[in-house]
Image (cartoon, rainbow, N blue to C red; front, side, top):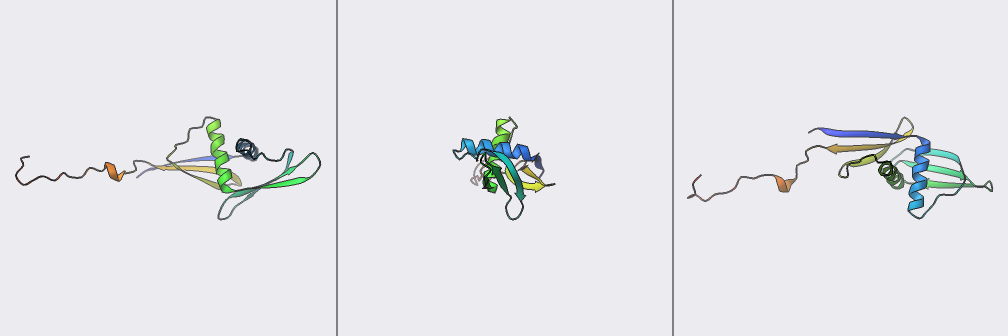
Length: 127
């Protein structure tokens, strides 16, 4: 069974922009200021540490979970009119030190309710 796979790699600025929009729309805006540090963490789950320097010179760190990172990237794709199949599996990975959205979809998934089964007939019926 063939599998369709797409890979969308994002640079650091695209990720920061996607995160800022996502958090603002979710009612939890990020700290206003300059990005002082941006670190991608790989492990069981991908996460990002975003350090923002405020106008006062304070450093505020935001720990971004994989779920929020995925939601931000998907929201960014939808906002920029990149079509994403709703029923496809979507995962966040780090490839070549870049946050990457991997979308894969099995073609022709068999729906058990749509499988045709032979009809039973009584012994006296004609074909």
